[in-house]
Image 1 (tube, helix red, strand yellow):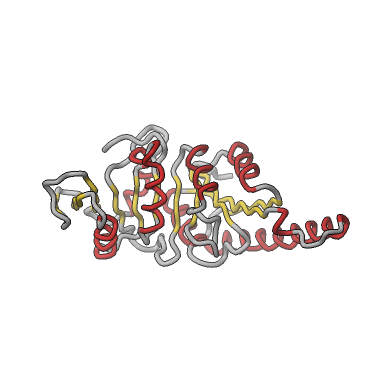
Image 2: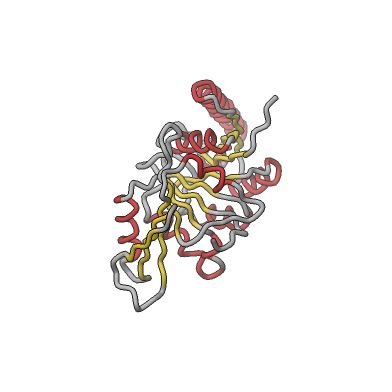
Length: 269
């Protein structure tokens, strides 16, 4: 049996079939030779509506069987349609505890999160965001409902500030054969010598856009991402250590593009 190079863990709710999360994850898996695990979880307090203990247990069992079967059907159907190995796991339990335990057991290479409540665990939720960022050191894919990664088209890859290239992370290099050239490098720097417009530099394989750090930085960056048709933005997590960690959620939520957050031990390119 063929062994895939990467294990992708999608933290989902029961509506994973909606939106672009599964589509983007499948496309990424096809490019990097990955297998996918859909991990869905519900808090018991959101499942049980009955006060009677027996009725509550029946409701939990019903919800578990129904959701688990639906998730398995989705995984099987998508796997057959797209030729990607997809499995699923459904659990009723406390979110943070169950996610932490499953991360230890499954040991994924990539974790997939989303920004919209309607298709995936909300990345903007402080508790879930902090949990993943603090306990998972590998790459994190954050999907977007408006833009999708498509494996049948060349990848318009953008890089924000730097590229992670440590020994644990080969995912960036595995994506390079599928990317358009030149790659777009975006930098936001704290420099009074730059105005609020992009300063552009070009080398053989890259074009670099430089922005000054100010109140309009993300707005200007977003415009250039759209203008260049970027459908995956690579972001180095090392630039958001400690007190800067809170800015990471701001970048993710305000930039309407799928993002690949580097491993925790990324190094400057």
